[in-house]
Every structure is written in structure tokens, then in C-alpha cells.
Amino acid sequence: MRITLGVTGGVAAYKAAELVRLLQQDGFSVQVVMTRGAREFVTPLTFAALSGQKVITDLFEKSSAGEANLESAIEHIAVAQRTDLLLVAPATADILAKLARGIADDFLTTLYLATTAPVIVAPAMNVNMWNHAATQENVEMLRARGVKIVNPDEGYLACGMTGAGRLAGQQEIVVAVRETLHTQKDLQGETILITAGPTCEDLDPVRYLTNRSSGKMGYAVAEAAARRGAKVFLVSGPVNLETPAGVKRIDVRTAEEMRIAVMDRFSESSIAIFAAAVADYRPAETQPEKMKRNKEPLTIHLEPTPDILAEAAQTKGNRLIVGFAAETDRVADNARKKLAVKNADLIVANDVTAEGAGFDHDTNIVTLFSRDGRDLALPKLSKSEVAQRILDEVLRLRGVLLHKPESHRSAV
Image (cartoon, rainbow, N blue to C red; front, side):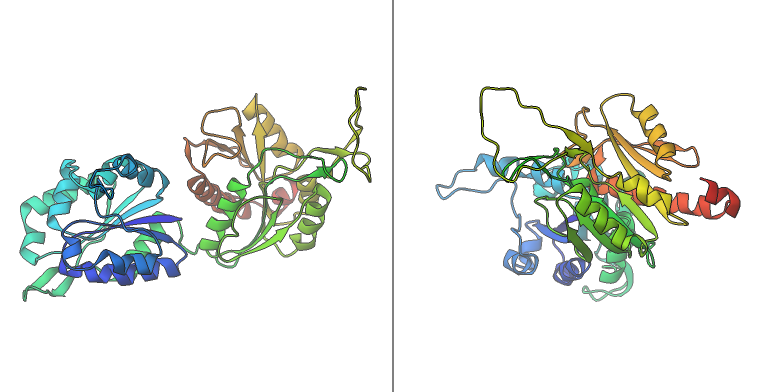
């Protein structure tokens, strides 16, 4: 997940360097945005070296000729769209006022208005500034808009006074980040088996049948599950994605290879999430040599591939099974049918023709159809956020099913 860290001008700015390190240890990618005041206390080079990323310092960067370039003029939009969370630490009284009043006169304040990601603010300032009615009014205004405020600690301040105003501890801020991004360890002790990506079914040595799956949704679920404390096995078809931190990845190519990999690890799992877009058919025969082009029509005989979800669900026992349904029509009817026929506990369904959903997008629009009759329609969200909502529903549903009588549970 990507965090944008806004550092503003105050003595506590140096503490943001340690915050970058702690966030990276938690697996987050951190990009730093510094205000002009922050650069009076810490150099951008410090954060660039720690984060390994460009540090943004100005709304309009100048070219070698001294002219503002177009790319920098819209960079705040790009950063706003790709970040999963905006964290401002330390936040001065000045930045609190600007955020509360919608003033956008530098990169950080402009980014705040442009992003739809959650926002966390950790104030740090003189005790009298913190207690001032104007500052408290700004804080309450931000809270009312959904901004999470990590209140400052009390203690000896750099100005020589004692009281509230010292930047909260870095670990407290990291905990707030975890909670906001649903990275609490609520899946500790679970072993989750996840499939992702497409499968490829060979016609001959150079041609194969496949689909448009990028694997992004399955990989987002694997990353989220690992962050939430689960042991994760990811059985992946051919994709161009990095393995999420803490995830054991098993690469496969065909539906049969995926079936074998799944069944080899199914007994170890407590939850199985089938997000892969497995080819439904494969050539009945694979030609040993490349088929030559000619003027005659070509007929290829296809046979069904193994139904991995249905096979696994036959022996699921107390495991919770999640399937995916990529549909182009009658989404709810098809998803409910699949939920029953496949003996699943949750189906994540979407209309792949909808704008912002489907294959190879960074966003998705899904409805979660649960065994207990609940239908949860989600708005367009990043696939990372969809992954978190799926895992939230898995935990809710597990609690519901475990509290049902055993005879009923085994019948579903």
C-alpha cells in the first residue's frame, strides 16, 4: 500500500524520518511531501534516502530553463489518485487551519483537496497554540469531515513549556495507520489459500487459450490478508505482478496445474479464496508442432477444465470458501446460483463491462453475496480497498456460521 507523508514546518519534523522507517518496516511504500517550512528543519535528501522515492517540495517545479513544467503542474492529481492514505505528521497549527478552510496554496494542501484517500493528521505545536480556540475549532472541523486526528502527547516541549503539543509517539501513529487501512492482525492464526490471475491452455507450442485477467484483484487480497496477520499461499497464473510481502507464491500455468497446487495445500488452509480466472475449456488435444496457416476453416475441439472451486468445496469441512463471478449480465442471479451450486460461503461478483470494473483496472465495483443471505453492494473502490472489504465480510461471515448449529453448518 502507498502512503503519502506530509511533513510540515516544526521542530518535530525530524521525527518524521523515524516514522518513514517504521512504516516501511510494516511493508508500506512511503512518498514524502515537504512544505517550505519543513525544509528549514530537515533536508529533502534525508527523506529521499530513507524512502527511496522522490521527495515533492513544490507545486510547480522549474525546468533547467527556469520554467514550470506541465508534468509538475498536475502531479498532485497523480499522487492523489495513487495514494492509499495521506498522513500529515507533524502537522502545524498553520496546516490545520489551511486543511480545515480548504486553502490550497502549496503541494500538500492541494493534494489534500484532490485525494479521496483516508487522511490522518498528527499535530505538533506549542501548548498554547494547541489549546487556542481557533486550533480546536479547526481540529473539530477536520474530524467532522472524517479526518483521523492523532492527538499530541503531553510533556516538555521544545519551546520550554510543558503541556499538550508534543508529536504523538511514532508507534501510536503507525497503529492509527494500520487501523485506518485495516491492517490490524485480525487474521492471525488463519491460513488462507488464494488463487489469482489467468490460466493458459496450449493449442500448440506457440499458441494458447487464455483470458484478460491481470491478477490484480487476487494479489490485492493476498497482500491484505498477509498484512492482517494470515499465513498466505498464493497460487498464481502467469501475471506481471510482484509477490506481496509475506506471501508464499506458487506459480502455475494451466488449469490442471492450478488444481494440483490448490489441492496440495487445501488441507492446510482455514479459508480459501478463488479469485483466479480459470479457463473453462482447453483444447482436447495439444498439437506437438505449430499448426500451419492455410485457407481452410479450422475447427478446434474443446473440453471442460477441472472445476477447482467446486472440487475443493466438496470437502471444505469448516473451511470458509470464497468464489468470484465475473459476469456480463444478470449479475445477481448468476452469483446467487453459483453460491448454491458451488457450495461456497461468499461470492464476489461484478459486471466486467461496467466502467472502472473488471480486468486490468486498478478499481473494481463488486457485490458480495453471502451464504447467510446478505448482499453487500460496494461503490467503485481501489482493488486494495475491495480486498479489505472482502476480508471484513469473511470475518463477519465466519462468526455467523460458527455460531450456527453444527448440523446446519454441515448442510450448507
